[in-house]
Image (cartoon, rainbow, N blue to C red; front, side, top):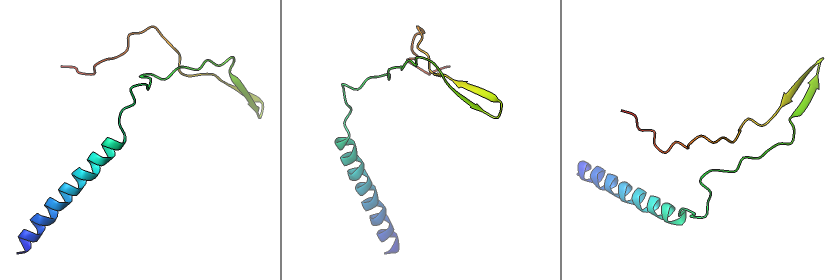
Length: 76
């Protein structure tokens, strides 16, 4: 009897998780208008901070390039 209750509980939990996850996926469909890569913002100049006799200049760290995008990460 105890084994039957455990099997029934596991089955109900599996079915419930499947139904909840399918409802979540259905509610969050892919947006075909979404860009594949976000645009890169260009800063006019870096911002400078000065403290205790030193200064630090921060600029954009993401730079656009003409390198081909990676379409696969498979390596044998």
